[in-house]
Image (cartoon, rainbow, N blue to C red; front, top):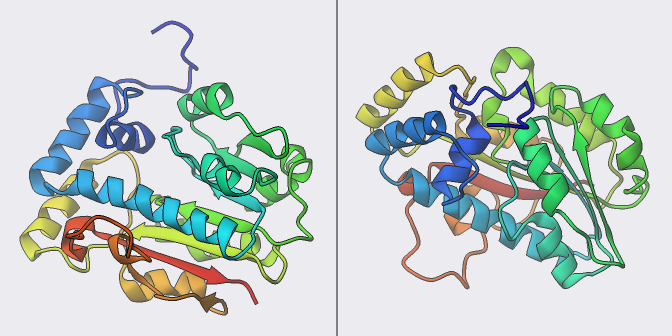
Length: 269
C-alpha cells in the first residue's frame, strides 16, 4: 500500500489492527484477520470480549466526566480510533474536557490525527509515545500544552498492560504515571486474564502466544490488583469488564469466562 509508514509490516499481525478487526473495523490486513480467526477458533467469544472492553471504557469515562467531574484524560495505548472514543464520550458530557492520547503505532497515529477532533471549548492531542517510556509521555510538550497536571486527570490504561511482559516491569511503568497525578485523579484499567477459562483453552492460548511475535502476558486478579496498590478502588472494585457498573446494559450479561477481562477504576488519594 502506498504511503504506509516504513515501520508498518503488513505481513505480521499487530494487536491494534487485530483488535480493530474484532470490533468490526476495516483498518487491518490479512495477517491481522488470520491471527484473529485463530484466536476465535480457540476462544470463540473473543469478539464479545473486545466489545465488552469498549463498553467498560465508555461507562468508566461517563462516570468520571459526569459523576466525578473529571475534565482531563490521558489515554495511553489507545489503539485505532473506534467511535465513541474517550474524547467523544467525555466532551459529550463536558464540552470543555481535555484529552491526550498516546500510542506508538504508526497506523494508529495516522488515523488518530485525521479523525480526532475536539469541541471548540475543549482540546485533544495525540502523542507518538511509548508506554515503556513514561517520562517521555509526561514531559512531552503536547501533553504539557493540553493538560494541567496540577489538576485531576483520569489515566486510562485500557487493554494495554497485557502487552507488557514481566521483564519490562509493568508496575514500574505505571507507578511514575500515577505519581505524576494529583490527589483526586483516577486510574482506569482493563486487563486480559485466564482466571476463568477452561484449562484446555488456556493451554491452546499459551501455545499460540509462544509463536506470536507480540509479547502477551495475561494476569490473575491478584496481579491485576497490584497495579492499584495504595489507591482507592471505587465500587464495584475489580470485576469482569462486563459487570463494571453495567446496570443499564442489555441483559443477559456475558460471563467472566466469555470476556476474559478484568476492569477497575480507582481514585488517587
